[in-house]
Length: 201
Image 1 (cartoon, rainbow, N blue to C red):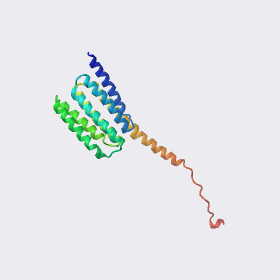
Image 2: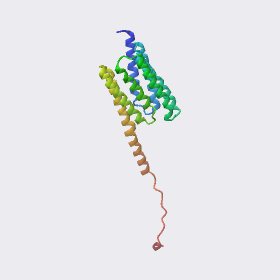
Image 3: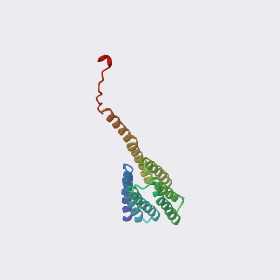
Image 4: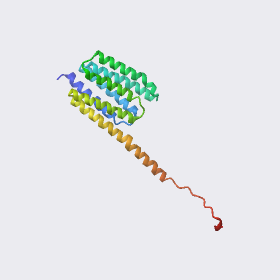
């Protein structure tokens, strides 16, 4: 086992751990930033073992994520994401066409296209659902290839995304609703001036 392979596996482990942590973040900005960091480790990992296509695909994802961080920071509307979405799909298709190995490479086009569209949304629930769909697709892909470690990571990805939905889209709104109701109940009742009736005068 070569030193380059060992370094590659360490890098991909770190990148995967960061990517999994991103699923539990409660803001789009934090999710995107962690995805940028994760993609850096993934690109380096595939470079060390001389796998050009996965390295290029992750580099495209890295560039797109960095630009999405900028768009999110500036609170740009949905139409601002159209150009990076189109560029992501085109560059991914060109990369796969140039470095084609088998039909499984089409999963990479589908994956980056789904993520490019999904992360253009502002609603975190929609984003988490998109990441679940993407991870489920890669789970099927890794099972076909017999890459069971990758499949396990995909399962963890799905579980953590579901945990994120439960925490931030189900439990948190219910807690907030209860707090609002309790706040209303604890509001002091204003003194009402008593006006005597005619028969009491």
